[in-house]
Amino acid sequence: MYEFDKIDVKIVNLLLEDGRMSASELARRIGDISERAIRYRIERMIDDDVIRISAVIRPEALGLTIKADVWLEVESDLILDVAKKMTEFENVTYVACAIGQNDISIQVVAKDTSEIYHFVTEVVRKVRGVRKTTTSIVPLVLKDVYQWRVPERISQELDEKQIT
Image 1 (cartoon, rainbow, N blue to C red):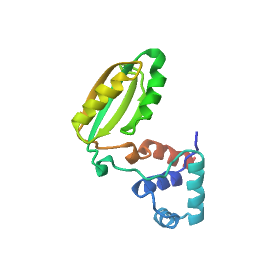
Image 2: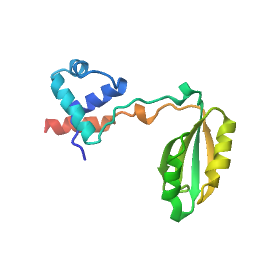
Image 3: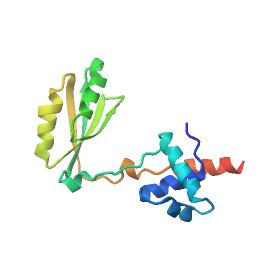
C-alpha cells in the first residue's frame, strides 16, 4: 500500500480540480514545499500506479447523451470471458465483475434509448454465456470516479499519524 501523507492528499485533490495544474502553481497553493518536490511526488505517485493523469472525454460532447447501467447474469464458468468481451465494445464505458445477484456490471453510452435497446438485445444478450440482463437508464450522474476525492477520514488519520 502506498504511504500517503498530507501533502500527497493536497496534490491529488488539486489535480482533481485541474489535471494540468503546474508544479509551480501546486507549490504556491500548498505552501511550504518546492516545485521540484511536487514534481517528484507526482512522478512517484504515477510510477507507483497511485494516480493517473489523463484526458477524460465527456460522452455527451460526442452526442452520446444516454447512459444505461446493465447488469448481466452469466454462466459461472464464463464470467471472466464475458467481462473481457464487454471491454471490447466502444460504447461500454465501465465493466466490473460483481458478487451477488448479478455477475457483471457494465455502463453503456448511446445517442438514444433505441440504440441502448439494440445494443443490449442484439449484442450483449447474444454473447455466449449471458443468461439474463437488467437495464436501467441513468438520467443523472451526480458524482463520477473522476470526481472522487481522498476521504476526509483518511486525511484526518494522516494528520494524526504525522503528529505522533
